[in-house]
Image 1 (cartoon, one colour):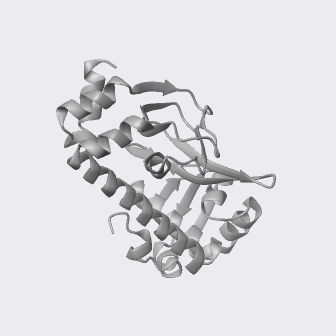
Image 2: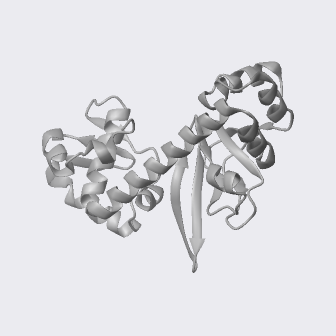
Image 3: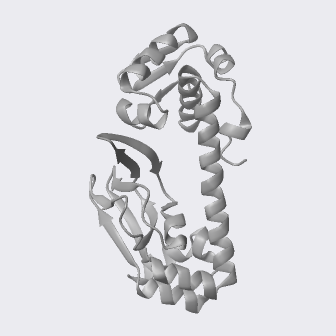
Length: 232
């Protein structure tokens, strides 16, 4: 990697507090690559050979079983994936593919484990990263178990609306099939949920959504910071 690329990676929270020599060791074996959209990076069931850090773009984590496939999560910058498998020397539980043109740092798993053993600050950063991933899974599990499909959609629309400036309209960041999978629905159920939200001011125009009655939608959504707040 070039020096400017190494500097960019060094400034990430995961690597900022590392010992300089340990950082140099893992970067000597690392790759920073740019992938086009729809490239499969890993396959569930294979050994976890690399740890991945998404610098630009977006990566879809997905799984298959019994002829079915579903989206598990979407990883955006700066995000990581497959950390638990790397630390446990286990197989991947999910597959991953780029959903946009993406720049990704790939670090051999053995080097990550060695760095965790040799550098206390890096080990602490990895624990914090893993804890954040775990808490995100708990929140998503609560979202799926404690809310109806319509409530899940209402909350997700409120979140996208806030992310995009809160001006009364928004664009869906993903296609509706992906959105349905993220919300634990079939595409047909998602369509019915959108119809149910019409009386709450939700107007669907393709991928554009107008929210004309935010107060009613918020009342239905019943936002809960222990589920919806990314910083909690």
